[in-house]
Length: 493
Image (tube, rainbow, N blue to C red; front, side):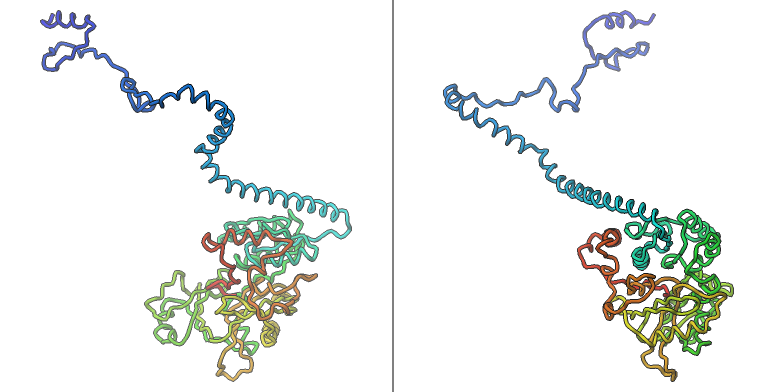
């Protein structure tokens, strides 16, 4: 037994709190028992209970004064209670949040008040139209994020058609907010690896909605994919307002545009076909880049599918091209003539130009100005007459022309084509609401810049106007007037 055992037993039995020093504890002695004392947590009190200070109370009011002021204090007690409620700190937060709540509630109530009558009217109109003999035909429109598609949908709706629209995923669904559109769909983006997936998605919409007429607005997708989907949609009884794939390549390919223009006796801009990086370097070494403004565009069937266009820098050291240039993927460099730029929206029916709307590109005001141009109409008629389509061509085509300032080639027609695109373009906004939805009414819009306010707003269909500017315009620019319609940069019309 260790020598320190009796001493340890005596200390363990005692109730006295002692502090054991490590120096005097024997090596055979176990660690001592320590009595723990509860401390006061700062969660409940910042001052320990032993040092808590009672709040100071005001000295008592004399009994005489209390008796004299008993009546007034009794009458003013409701006033004091009301003041204590008004001065509560919670009212500060309520006053900050209340305006936002009122605005949100007002908008919600307004939307519900507008939505319910519109839904009832649509239901009644649907019942009446289903009982009638003349059931409205369903029209399918693509490019549901563009202004021209909205104008086209309103025209068909005013003509009595049932409008269904769609847009590829990721784009702003502008037509979804329009009262002219009965139903809106989103489809996957066309993929060159599986081009028929886009056709299957369109065919499913046609079968589900019993579509009898399809008008593509090729603003976000090339018309090449719509042409591939055309046979699949015609099988189920839908007439497509788009040429076949071979004719689309003829119109969207810049090299084919030059060939047809030369066959028709029309002047063409100066261009160079490049099939390798060496061809591009040779073009720069020739000094052609110093003689004007040039752009490079994709050519061939792939060019009609991709529709790519880039501005060429003047210096060879600044040329950084992100695409492949090869014999399988050729490109064409075009010198852009100097002069007035013109954009058209031409309606083809059975390979005949039945309508043509012309707009001048105003660089100063950054918009399109509608104008009556007989020279452009004659150019379009002559170009279309020399086309050799596989089958009668029906659809919309947009030409981008330049009226040369000082022609030195001796031609009487000074218009030069620098690009074309299959599909409805921005000049279609000049067309009025007629029975067929395709005839032109340019009279009141001549020499006025196409403004998105005029194109988007309609008193019977105001939601697209609000949705467009709330989603597109930045927060710091929503108070500014809307900008005019702009032609997309680096994209041929």
